[in-house]
Amino acid sequence: QKEVEQDPGPLSVPEGAIVSLNCTYSNSAFQYFMWYRQYSRKGPELLMYTYSSGNKEDGRFTAQVDKSSKYISLFIRDSQPSDSATYLCAMSRSNTGKLIFGQGTTLQVKP
Amino acid sequence: EAGVAQSPRYKIIEKRQSVAFWCNPISGHATLYWYQQILGQGPKLLIQFQNNGVVDDSQLPKDRFSAERLKGVDSTLKIQPAKLEDSAVYLCASSHSGVGKYEQFFGPGTRLTVL
Image (cartoon, rainbow over all chains, first blue to last red; front, top):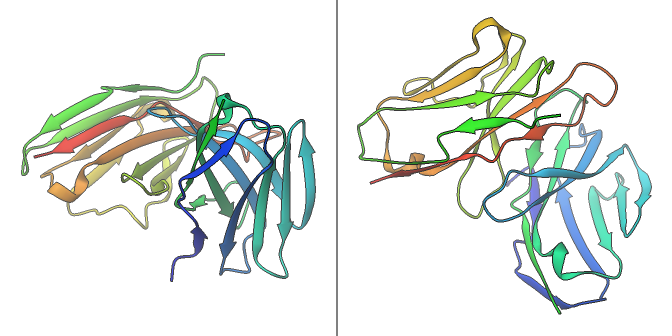
């Protein structure tokens, strides 16, 4: 069993839709949870960062962490074609330790 | 600030050949990471440096992979000899040691194809 599970998709939505991306994990030692966005042939870039449980909002993006269920989510409101990318969840035991990534979900937002 | 630089961007080699990748992290970043990203998968950490010392190399196939970070700045990752399953994108990332040190900044990667 992988430490972090993520549905690879692909996920295709119309412009303006609300997108929900999710990851589950098995290791309760994870404390730091991140979402990275990766455009084709580019390196990942940090989108959202959350420590422990709770919600965090940044513009159109909301990250949720439920440690009791070992489940994290990323919501994208009013999705745009420019949001089309692969979204990777990542987790770490410490804020300087190695990141364990999910497989990534490919999202396509159609105009 | 300038981002993480990597070269070459693409490399095609035959199996059993050797190859080397170069990474220049963001200026002042003490921590440097090398990840392997196989097509359709998330990045997997190969090695983490703090300045020029190795912090974690538990997932580095040491029989064929080696990495060094001279003077705590640039780093090279070498594969010798390459196998077909080494075909992947090799990503370099760096982070600093101050506030926000959790954030890893990634370079564009080197796409390796082993034939």
